[in-house]
Image (cartoon, rainbow, N blue to C red; front, side, top):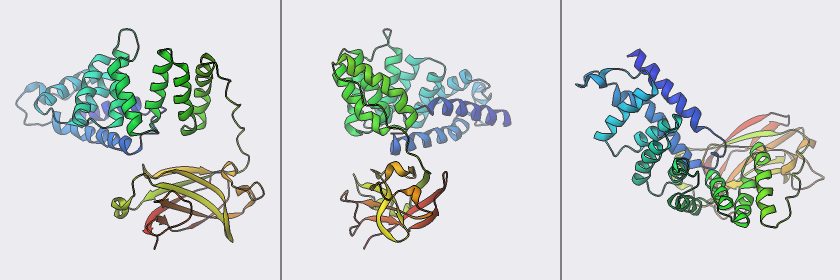
Amino acid sequence: MTVFVLASLAVVLVLVAFALRPLWTGARRSALALALALGVGTAGLYALLGSPDALDPAQVKAPETLEEAIVQLERRLADEPGSVEGWVLLGRSHAARGNWPGAADAFGKAQALLPEEPDLMVELADARMRAAPDGRFPADAVALLERAVQLRPDHQRALFYLGAQQLQAGRPADAAATWGSLLPLVDANTAKALRPQLDTAREQAGLPPLEPAPEAAAGPGLAVTVALDPALAGQLPPNATLYVFARTLEGGLPVAVKRLPAEGFPVTVSLSDADGLMPAQKLSGQDRVLLMARVSRSGDAGASPGDLEAEALELDVADGANATLVIAKVVQ
């Protein structure tokens, strides 16, 4: 039994390592669902494949390799075809082995069970492209990417793949527009890798290159994690806006503020001088600040009745300082 558990954990570690690649950060709520599916898959392999009283000797034998685990998982899914997490786990297993037709088939079955799930659409589109003999996105994969972006306009992987397909299809202006919308959504390292590709698309479209990336702002950076009290999960407004900001202890306008969609909690943002509103009043000029977070129903920065917010927290200003704010009350 111990060998089985270790083998199962090894399989899941391989899958998680494969899954956690750049450009997956945009898939917030759905990414959480898929992460949970992988977690469930860990226990699922044991529950589905490791039953000691199974009659089939092949089922009793603990899988010692990824290939054996795949065979057992396929056998079990034949009996339980409605398991989304099982199909996702099988798709990731095939992908880890480079079996893209098998991955496309498995992700296709998962996507059929959750047809409006953007993450599954992107997984399936990616697998179908990799399985295609010419290495191009087939028409059905393109349709999946377009639908994923329609459902979630900030889905980073969907935007990246869609821009790649547009450039591949001889539509550089469309690719430039798609990647241009992706650029502000990604972190600095990903943006650095994306900019040359975006400039290539712009050049082919007869557009000027991008302006040079601004230099990183000097001064300390604060890491602020914002969590949502589960008791308020049902009150989270659709399309709401999250504001995370730092004020001086005396009040007044924020010395640093971030504005982003109110989803995917918990989220972590960084605050620095680059997020300031006034050049004369910078975060780096403060010894201590008051951190605040608010979910705005209207999208306005000012508090309104019905908004959700966290208790303010004081923090010393120092590079690498971090704090956690919990959105746990309703503005009256």
